[in-house]
Length: 453
Image 1 (tube, rainbow, N blue to C red):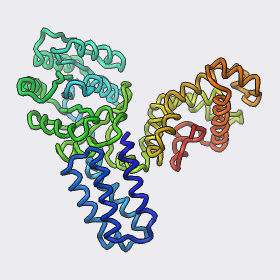
Image 2 (spheres, one colour):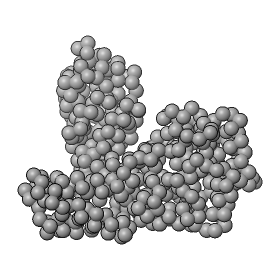
Image 3 (tube, helix red, strand yellow):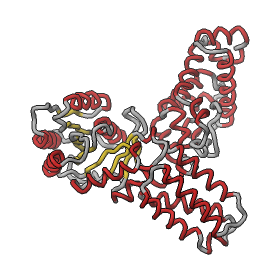
Image 4 (cartoon, one colour):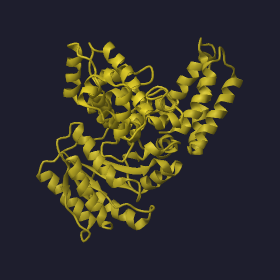
């Protein structure tokens, strides 16, 4: 995510980090590079101008030039200003209303709006909301209604039925009435997508908004559209009072222009960010954490939170208990840890949150993707139970059989065994600690052990 911007900014700021002293000329040169990096990331020009000027004013101050490590101080200023640009802190959903709290979700066609409704329902259910009802007011695309029904079942939300013959306003009214009658905590209304901000469709969504009186009006926008995302959100906000923005497809956005422009251009906070197609691929947006990720400093706090949320505690405790009793970490345990990583979005998602991970060359990142996890699983699955429990017995002929059985080469088996040995050493050092969440805390300083580099 935002790889191009991360690499450009990291390279520029690393040059400052190594300098013993800075001059206004040094800073001016660095900010020229920062300006070009932001423009190449498709950040809106007025946003770039304001950002660079704010950094310049702070960076040429006496406190910076006279400090013992002025380069580090400038980097801190850039990080702080990136955070301010994106909103400083996470702005939570306003659910402190008489139930049901109504969330109205709008967006352009193709932005991932209906999938985002399901992701949002799942996120709410996993973060303390007892019941969520979802309803589709999109009478122009019957497939959208069917899609939402399927996704609602998948995430555990209640689906309110509707069809193309109904009036969107009537659907919204009936869904809210049902939510009140059944004591649901939240009702999410999925409105019709539009190709652009046209008056007829805007009039319709305004009528739905008037009837629903939502606690939140959220605009879903594709982050890969860059500064256009901010401009569309601003145009939409002029027609409908938005309370927040959800950026989708951020995992495919190498630039980052939308994330850096939306708050400044619209005045509306980014509340969530979509980082994949699966229904669990939605994260609360923390500007200060995203600023650190953009500068290649990682986001270990989010990583630990995710580990605590998604890791199977029973399995983690069993592993901890096993290690405490002196029984070794074997390949079956290793396979379990790989599965836990897959549950957390795969290695690419983990790397994005590790210090230095986002700045790895594309080839290295690819070697640590989901395909590599699948390959490793296939190799372990091709072993006998005795081999998984006692990896030391895996020698030449066994390696050839395992490679052939898993559709890999002997060198792939050797690489996996080397990675396993590294993980085994880490687990020995951690046997009094236990748990993958603790393992994540041990990764603050760099790459996870046992992963291909």
